[in-house]
Each structure stands twice: as structure tokens, then as C-alpha cells.
Image 1: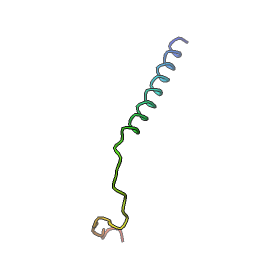
Image 2 (image 1 turned 180 degrees about the vertical axis):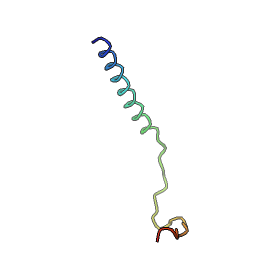
Image 3 (image 1 turned 90 degrees about the vertical axis):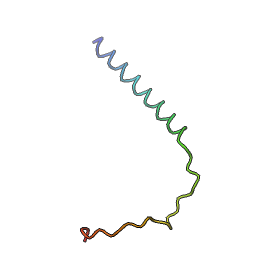
Image 4 (image 1 turned 90 degrees about the horizontal axis):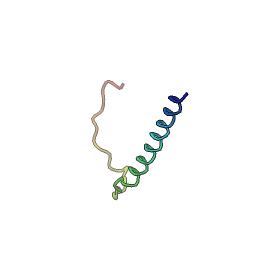
Length: 51
């Protein structure tokens, strides 16, 4: 029973650490200052196998 409790504690600590790491990554993510333009798509050649 003690091993199960310690395993649950470790899993809980991992979930908390992952949540904190996720928040830190979101906060430190660089801001993309250029707006996304859908008028300028890259030139992609047509795939003949798709027909």
C-alpha cells in the first residue's frame, strides 16, 4: 500500500511540474508581430497523383 501511495505522489508531482513548464513555455513564447496574410500563399506544385 505504501508503494502505491508513493507512486501516486510522484505522478502528482510530475503533473504539477508539467503544468508549470507548460505555463512557462506559453509565457516565454516569442510574439509573432507579423500578421498572417492568406493572400500570399507559397507556390506549391500540383500533385498529379492526387487526381
